Amino acid sequence: MLKAVIIDDEAQSRMLLNQMLEAYCPEVNVVGMAKDVLSGIKIIQNHHPQIVFLDIEMPNYSGFQLIHFFEGNLDFEIIFVTAYHQYAIQAFKASAIGYLLKPIDIDELISAVKKTSKLLQSPTQHARLETVRQNIDGDQINRVVFPGANSFIFLNTTEISYLESDGRNTMIHLMDHSEPLRSTASLKDCEDLLKNNTFIRIHRSFVINLIHIQKFSRGRDSFVQMDNGTKIDVGRSYKETLSEAIDLFTR
Image (cartoon, rainbow, N blue to C red; front, side, top):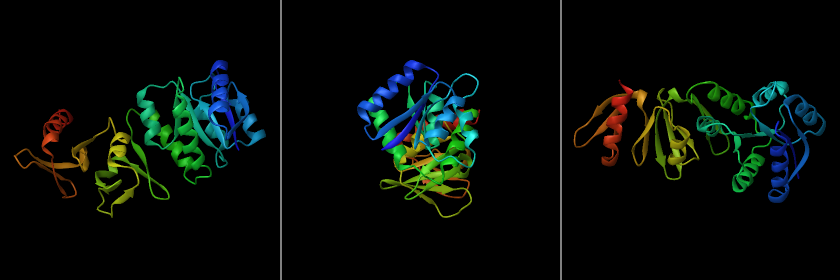
């Protein structure tokens, strides 16, 4: 049984989530609920939950500030519960952090609990939380967390030259010419993580970083040459989209 705490300044939201967990996530036992960060901290210290469902926008202290009260001693996973706009949701995805969008969907709740329970005691927890904070504080996704076989891969987006499909996995090619890194995420999933950034798909097997294009040949056999010297063919159906993206990017 997983012990959980709910922290949300809206009483109705707390009660609704509690009821949904009782009905659809029997492996979760809610041991306490709080209306703000400070009272939530006391409940966490008393009950030592494995999961904390945490609202972000609350009076006095935001949900992100709760993290700082447990520096070096964060032994629970967080699922953010938020009505944030789409950009913030993208930041959560890019940081491999659990989240639920209000109003909460039952299937998404069940999925979030299952995923989060697998991450308990993860040594990368602090780094993932810091990554989501940095991404939300900025105006674009600057750091991404890719799932690996038995770990997470933390990268700044500017480090990435291009991504290449490798069956159900993805090879991440970096600017420093080091060996590519393998992520267990599909190329489509990686593309979604990098959405609204400087990345664009140019082939069914390749997503590139626009800032690292050295040359773009627009001929019949179109290709791009990256800063690291790699040449990548541009699929016919992607040529026009790439041309438009480059024109927009270089204005």
